[in-house]
Image 1 (tube, rainbow, N blue to C red):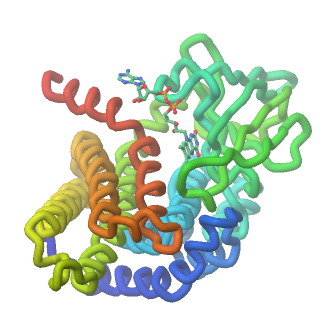
Image 2 (cartoon, rainbow, N blue to C red):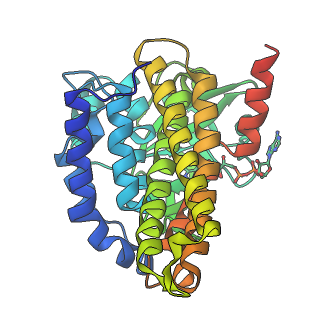
Length: 372
Ligand SMILES: Cc1cc2nc3c(=O)[nH]c(=O)nc-3n(C[C@H](O)[C@H](O)[C@H](O)COP(=O)(O)OP(=O)(O)OC[C@H]3O[C@@H](n4cnc5c(N)ncnc54)[C@H](O)[C@@H]3O)c2cc1C
């Protein structure tokens, strides 16, 4: 595997880095303090083509997985909250619509969604069904050729501002199917945003469905778990790249701080205990990057990448939280102050431990693969 980026990948990285530095970072602290959907940034990411990167032409630009992950890392370096909303749109919020919608629905929604004009979501989690998705109770019943959905979803990213909802629902004892529901449909209630520790401008809320008519089924009846498995490795890799981005931001800030801050007559980076933190942080980020690139490379070669993506996601998210924690230690009281972004990085990074599967679930999956 060659870790060097090609010209196109370098250009993508540079484009999204500039966007993150010039547009996202100046707004990041305010978006954390006064959480709102950053519509302007969401639209600008669409203008840069971010939402269509994963999809083949003519719908999208059909970029390789590594190029997509480079863009994700830069967005997360700018703000993990902004990146969380944008990545939802580029992957799970549009994936099943791209894969399965047809005719008028596709015409009306897909192109607009890939430009960032129509906002998508994925609705799987329920109050009593998180990691154990198969225990979901939201159901869909066919009545006169119309699927009616009833049940409750929670923690749905972008739900407060979304136009379309990709909903997993039970269509039989042992089967889950996927439906598209549009905002404004009778029987759909969007709850108020859930207050949370981090990624605050990535708004999430509950949804309830009361015999809500679906616009259409996405894929065939009972295809829910099989369709989800097709995209699970991509979700995990994407989350790993989010973790790498926020971890790198914390590392860079604390390295700069350690060179400026003088105590006992020396810059603090001259103290071995601070050097130990910085060395550990560097190693963790480099190792995370290599696991991510390795899994992306396998994916781009058309090789199986489920286990590699789980390993990358597990390692990168745990590393990001540790790196952000170490950054706050290096900066001590300034690392604790809201005036600096470091404490936000730490709060935000914890999201990557949950999104895309918790560390506990990933360890279980990786261990199972050893004896498969
Ligand atoms: C900011 C944010 C955004 C989100 N966005 C979305 C979204 O857009 N759409 C969506 O559908 N969901 C979303 N989620 C929900 C997320 O996918 C779930 O939180 C996640 O699947 C975990 O479920 P849970 O929180 O119910 O935890 P639980 O599954 O209840 O887990 C609780 C604890 O038990 C552990 N555990 C559970 N089962 C096992 C096991 N078999 N072995 C060992 N340990 C186990 C877990 O690792 C965890 O530590 C979001 C969550 C957050 C925080």
